[in-house]
Amino acid sequence: MTSRTPSRPSVAYVLPVYNEDANIDVFHATLVEAVAARPDIDFEFVYVDDGSRDSSLERLLALREHDDRVTVVGFSRNFGHQIAVTAGLDRVEDAAAVIVMDTDLQDPPRVSLEMIEAWERGVDVVYAQRRTRKDTWLKRTTAYAFYWLLGRLASIDIPRNTGDFRLMDQRVVREVNRYREQDRFLRGIVAHVGFRQEALLFDRDSRHAGTSGYPWKKMVAFAASGIFGFSTAPLRMISRLGYLISGFSLLLALYVLGVRLFTPDQAVPGWAFLGVGMFLLSGLQLIMMGVIGSYLGRVYVEVQDRPLYSVALQARGARLAPLTRGLEGVSDRAGDLAGEGSGSLR
Ligand code: UDP
Ligand code: MG
Image (cartoon, rainbow, N blue to C red):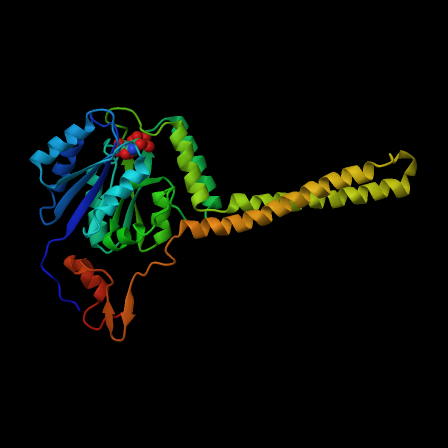
């Protein structure tokens, strides 16, 4: 059980690229320099070109000629950052750990080495949390507001101030890859999958060169994916509003009755029926829409077809079997998981 295969651990980088021709060479050089500090690990760099319109793809292919650890995947058109990362993740299931990072040098490569250290201590997901960020005031404020709202609405805890810069153990990557929803909010999916997750604080640099591939329209659509993908609260709001308005019609009815009883000379014929009826009917309509919404919410969850659960380990009898092939390759972690001989569950 505790046999430790001497094979070297492999760590793959998933690197989405969209119009980054001014950054790629510097980025790759910085990354290669950083990972040189860990000659004990086999590295692999999977660049996914997300339909760039500049010479990014040519530059990536040139990198590949000089560095056989580089894999290049080129999309037929721009599919978006989240899909580019997904395509990368689909191709690195065999790596013991995977690191996702941007290629504009906003995510410093040296931080990824700290992630690897945390992973070697047994953490399954190390997500980089921004201590500071050098973005515009507007971007910082909207990001704060978005995470606040998401925190209030979402069914799971999605850590604040994180991007997609994170390390995932192989077990996590395999679980994440089982989520095949079209509208992807990866940081939410990773939070949904679970496992042992830890934050690593870092200072986010500003973009090395070029412009953000996330203009406002994309940002808003992305924020909406986060909220609608992980919360049915907006649907529940419909029926709440319905109850509120129906309740109001009840109060109004009492008021009308009061006027009728105590100051009958002020009562206008027919207004009770119209006023109360208007609120009651629109309230009822909203409640019924909320009922439709509840069914729709269930249909939505079924259509998303997410895995029902993710297993972290399975202990049978006195033996404790790590569920993943290849985990044995990571000596310290395999020892951690398996315990020494007896297979104690911790
Ligand atoms: N990116 C991508 N497809 C897109 C937009 C961006 O693959 O449609 C990549 C981009 O090359 C970068 C990362 O995703 O490596 C983050 O994008 P960006 O820096 O533009 O976003 P920001 O940091 O401004 O949020
Ligand atoms: Mg960026």
